[in-house]
Image 1 (tube, rainbow, N blue to C red):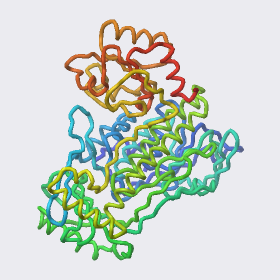
Image 2: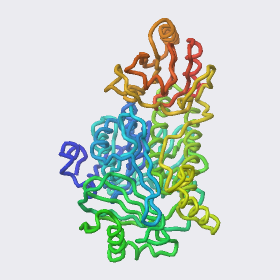
Image 3: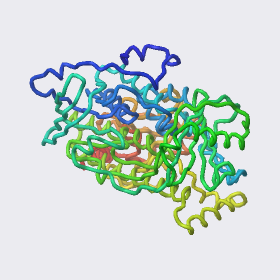
Image 4: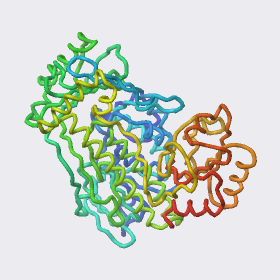
Length: 555
């Protein structure tokens, strides 16, 4: 089926798991010499699609290659965080994701059959997007593919498998296998977003290294109609699955995701058989509020925990993002969310380099920043895995003692780790950040992702809607009066292509002022990916120019 025809259809009529996209012969395949493109992206999963859309919106022509002609099957990545939804907003499909997804923020943790505590992931008001939505990966990919079809500078080529990569000083030469035979392309930059078994990574002789955990988990998608709140339920050692753990999540379309810990000795092929899955689900239901619910099994898979990453995410003209660069265990929803944040970081930098606005050293900052974020995700994922599946008697005794204490003592709840859930990395020490010269309070330090808040003057009434929406750096100026006017003059005198947003210090904007520790004249400089790169109480034109240059890798 043609992706443009799919985009014109009613989403409710589309079976995204069984879609097949048309292979089309491209004129590049008949060119006497390899056609050259600014960017070639490999892999049409959530990361590759997000990167390609972002580049096309920045007026960079991009070719997106995928070795298959279909979307993912089964739920796979299902938890998409607030930060990822904000990125999808900028890509033009966040509203669809949020509307289709199941919003949640409350989690419950159980030991045996008793709840030991609950947690709220977004206890504060004043954010447009929820803490998380649960949405099957095939919907995310489908919505992104439909958005991609709307962009004339984005060329998706299905059933185009990369089988060769040669590095040259000013380009990468890519060999592609198709149903019509092989052809070659030249890419100024090649972005590998082709997953944990990345063919591009193998073709250039690189690998991911790290730790593989000796445990197996069964994922089962179960369809059933039950009246139950959208919450995350996690059991340690439940009576219906002794000495193991279980996770339960609601998804759209009356589909529920269940993760059963199996142990290292489990046979993956045997565990995926319906006759072995159904009794496990029945035992869970018997211990739940919906004891007699009827269900049908929709999809199942068995996975092993692994925390891995490449040594560096840039290799000459080849840049790696998502699972091709790093991998974490599923608990904590850090895989797809961190991959989309890789794309968010990379797109504006590639665009700036291609337009001649920044040196290619800016792409080194992509590698350093996202390697830092990957290490943070791996560290948190490893801690979660060690708590959920202790591998020594001492670790198990500690885990069990913490769980026993958590029902009675608040301090112990901070030690319970059923998967520390994804939050965006604050890029401390980034080469693109200008250190503070003035005292500030709060979390909006250089390197942090901007915090949302209601802002009357902003696009759609929310601050995040107006930061980087036009692809430029953005300056926030707080307050009215002489101090704010002086800050605005400094920005104008800097003579830079900045978007400027004035935020009054009144009752309607009190939350924004609090989150940014704002006084009259306080100014923040934000990158196109909505990270803070500098802030001042009273900026000068020279200081703004220097911070802008530094954020473009010119320092």
